Length: 116
Image (cartoon, rainbow, N blue to C red):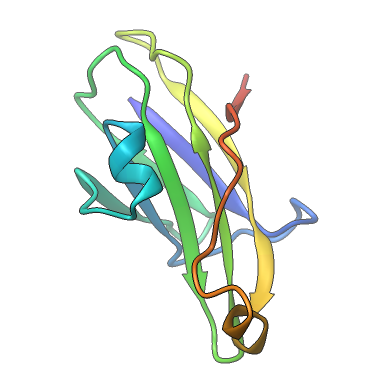
């Protein structure tokens, strides 16, 4: 199982309804190409994907609101089979007006922090 906890930047508020996009390669992730899977955070901010392969996954988590959106991105280490691989996804806030100067969000490629 590949699991995520999607939260705001304070890590105190779960982002219910946030979309988590999974990619199986960095090129598609960098180009915002079609993700291989999309999941939605429940009321606790949790998203789970089952039957995952032992490999690296690249992700974006996005939660749109009226004036802007929460977003983060990164990649997992190689997943451990037959285990729950859980990761924390703290998102940063952007106002839509800010994005006029930066039309495409660009996340630094960073390894996600595993939850224990």
